Every structure is written in C-alpha cells, then in structure tokens.
Image (cartoon, rainbow, N blue to C red):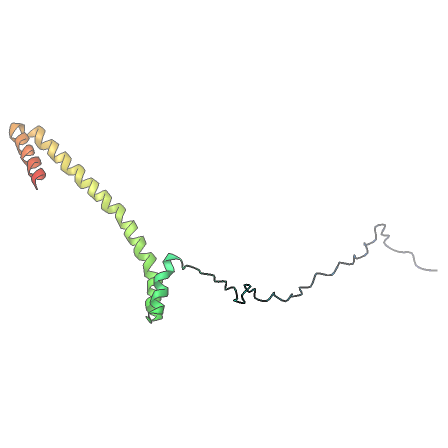
Length: 131
C-alpha cells in the first residue's frame, strides 16, 4: 500500500507556454546608385553646420592649433560668458546707487542751502548740459 500524500495540491502549476521565436534581422541589399538618363550619377550631399559654440574650436583645429588651446576655448569660453553676465548685475546696482545718491545730495543742497544752494544746483546742471 502506498503512503498517503502529505500535501494535496488542487491547483497544479500551469504548463509552460511555447514563446514564438523572435524575428531575426536579415539585411537586404541596398539599391544601386540612381543615374540620370544621360548616365551621370546623382550626388547626394549632406551639409551639416557646426553649432555656434563649436565652430571656433573646429577652425582652431583646422588651423593647426594644439588641442590644449582648443580645450581652453571649450572650458574658458562659457566661463567668460558667465562671468560677464554675472558681473553686469552688481555694476548696474552700483550705478543705480550712485545715481540715487547724487540725486539725493542735489535735493539736500537745494533745500538746505537756500538761494545759494539753488543757484549752485543750477550751475551744476548747466555745466552738465554743456559738457
């Protein structure tokens, strides 16, 4: 007599499915060059323009300049542009502060100085217009 099964499975494992084979790439021969009726072949040219940030480096390489100069141009070019852009804001702020200070000093001279202050402010304004 056979020993009874200890575990009874009422949901047996599914049978594995047969996967369809993957398609295999089979290269096809390319068509030959097309020619005009008179026998001249058609020439297809692809002209690519270099992006603006690389044009200088390509010209430098074509002129025989070393790779170090090209690497410096690639590295220092964007850094210089960033420096100039970031330096413009503080310079503008300083200019605004100087203009407001000069305007404030002019107003104080006009109000505190009395008639002499007013004439001094007018003289300064005239001198500015002349020069």
